[in-house]
Every structure is written in structure tokens, then in C-alpha cells.
Image 1 (cartoon, rainbow, N blue to C red):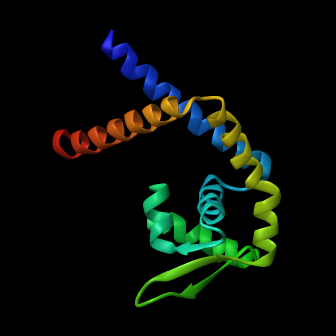
Image 2 (tube, helix red, strand yellow):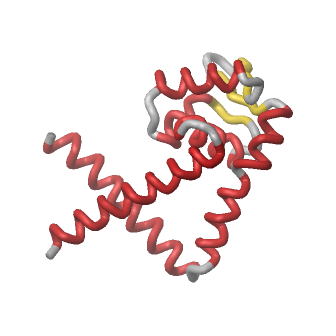
Image 3 (spheres, rainbow, N blue to C red):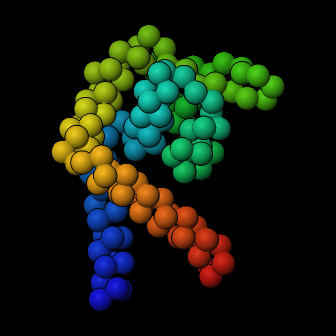
Length: 143
């Protein structure tokens, strides 16, 4: 029974990822670009490049390639932060694109979360974090 629930969680997680992929396709961007723009919108149009790596879990090489494409398309630009830190920033075009295409995704998510009680929201976050941490631990130790 426990095994069935573990598989069900894995399938549900994969389905949610697939739904975000469908959103990216509808918007006309790659999954990686969606993830980058998602973070940039949440961070009010600019953030450290290393935070994008950390928050999305996507490899540096993949993120760097996607950022170069965003630069070529006039959606984002890089600027030097403090020390060796690089900031990724939305251009005016990128800000307009994100307002039109990414913020509706935030609104959909907000609508879903608002259907839950505060207790349900907290419980979901806590259990998901606990699962993530345990998965990370066991993948390091057991594989």
C-alpha cells in the first residue's frame, strides 16, 4: 500500500510538471525559459543568476543557454552585481512579455491556493519540503 502511494505521488508530480510544460508550449517558450521568467517575475524583474540555478534546479549550462537566447530576443540582459555575482534583469520588452504571459500563470496558481485553507497550504508545503529533503538525502546515500 505504501509503495502504491509513493508511485502515485511520483505520477502526480510528473503530471504537474507536464502541465507546466503545456503552459510553456501555449506561451510559445521552452520550459527553461518559463522557469527563468517565472523566477524573474517573482523577484520583480531581476535576480542573481545563481538564484535562478538554485530555485529551478536546472543545470547552469541549460540556464546559461536560455539566458543567452533571452538576451538575443531582447527579453533579458545581464549586469554585473557585487563581486562575481551576475544579475539577470528583464528589459522593458521582457517585462511586458512577462506581464502578458507569465503573470496569468501566477493568477491561476493563486486561484488554486486560495481554494485551500491556510492550514492546508502550510501542511502541503511542509510535507513537500520533507519529501524533497528525504529524497535528496536518500539519493546521495543510497544511489
